[in-house]
Image 1 (cartoon, rainbow, N blue to C red):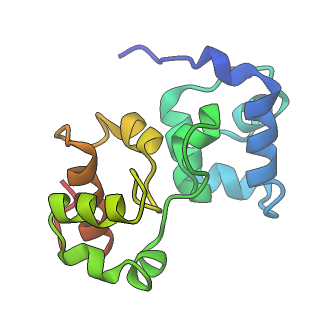
Image 2: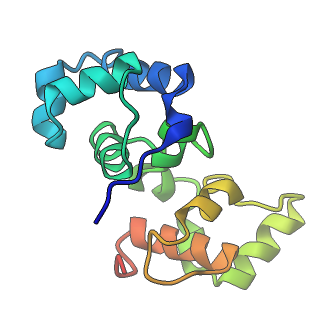
Length: 153
């Protein structure tokens, strides 16, 4: 399988986000390399913009530093996807709602999106899971999965 290069990531925006997330958080290049399996020199090349990242590496880096891969690559969607703790407090009751009930709840509040999951993130997650879900079904699935109430696939 050929590697897919992300041409638009070669901009200073990607390198700045990468440096901020990796080095700004105090990770050493060695720790990042060990945590992601990406050679230190490749990480250095990504950080200085001399090499364009490939999708699998963006995914590995994003998982290691716990940020949204779409945000890291393109600054699209939320920087950090919500954790179980973020979901369990104010949105715990959302886990028991159907997609239709979720939509009604937030439309009545004047919102067309769930506060934790915007539609851009949903659009870029298509293909991440085995099925393509309508937005509110996707929100219900993600909330349930984060709370351990739904299988991961």
